[in-house]
Length: 61
Image (cartoon, rainbow, N blue to C red; front, top):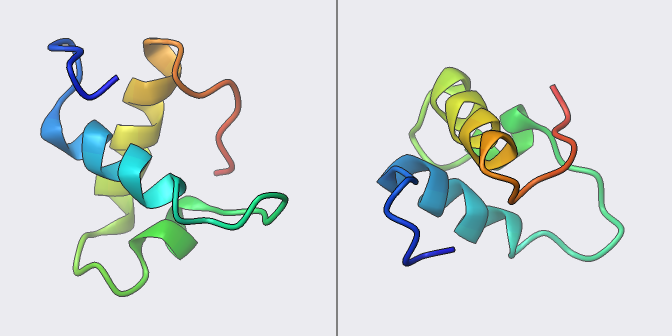
């Protein structure tokens, strides 16, 4: 997915952040954005992009 040129750097970063969430733990755009300095709307856009391209099947909003 990191080599997929359809994805923005934001979506790649959100994906990388998701990989740090422990298996089974629920995450939200807010929890992913916490401590990053990014606005929740930026994370939401990254999640939507990942969904669009099939890298995420369901995103908590």
